[in-house]
Image (cartoon, rainbow over all chains, first blue to last red; front, side, top):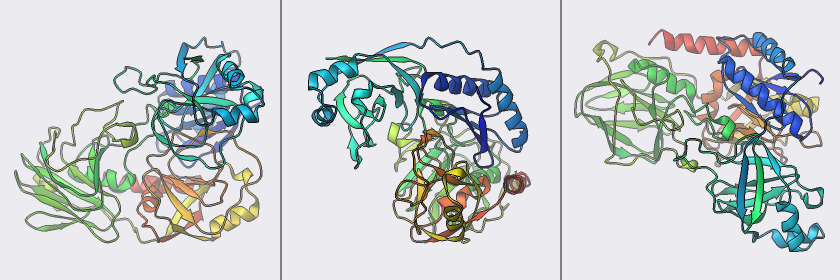
Length: 210
Length: 299
């Protein structure tokens, strides 16, 4: 692994870039580095595909010391054990408003699109955008499709969606630019649960056609 | 208890922010103007971790069951009980005395702190409201909020904190972290132009219009972001992320506003102008140290 690239992100954070690809190994390294940073107790870390943003109070920890510290942590992650992750099933009604068009542009029948989307296990790389919104991937290359040119002002909660190489479920009604291929009744983010987010980073996610 | 007599346009409970659940995609929330919030807490003698009320527009009125020290901070604010007390000044609130937070024409976010702090039940480790996810709710007239215990320090009444220069349009920022995504010309344009605050600005971010700032071709991978990050979406109109920013973002960030100046951005009104001045990280930290020291001397 090459040395991570560390850049200042304002006065109280660093952006640590581990690579530039969407793959499971990089995302797992990012999560492990975020865990190591959190354990240090200087502030919280946010992992994504191939990067981690680490926060700290610059009046308690000098940025130069934070950089040294995070680079040292990154080195100790070289022999990272692959996390098993939990297995999460999302029962899905494949009847989203973009289903037909997405099948057409992939040159697949609707049945083939459903079989392709529900036919593989995805890894939740990280959560962002909205509470509980998990960036899961990667999609079968045949159904990779770009985001909508005009994002919708309101995507209903529970919408099962794809964009680029990823898939997710919208936890809340919100604006959104992903292609809606189905919907699920499961509560993606529920404050009454001990862990409100149904899908956690590192989990293995499967969509089951209903 | 504190009784809400009138709630104004939108008032919510906020503490420093909810930083422990960013990894589940939960925005930090917390005050849009962190310095004004911290000053209000310091004036009434609360810890930095206590909760206060953020008020957006309209008249917010309240009374307390027992005697408290209260303070209002923000841009162009004051508080009126029996007497009118200027903003950024601690006042003594008698039991049952009704106070109204007076927001002037240039007011955007006002902070009301009461000694003892707002003692609502924390959700996911924080009392900050995040309305889109049903965390907390807008306060309504007739509502009663629990307050924490506080030793009544009458001496505090009349103490004041320096008011930041909210009328300045000069916002200090550190370049990056995606500076390599912009040409020298784009960066020069960004740091030398005047931008206008758009009406769509809110707690998530301050939207700007002005010259189009173009990023180089190519996508960037989504990464974590921080308040103050100046994102450049494909249209080229910058967005300065605010307290309620999403945990991650997928647009290149040309510069990041320094912590000490976050409130100066949030408090700009639609139609007002601002400029970004490039500073280095050392200066940013010195400015933060000065701001905290200023509050330390009144606490």
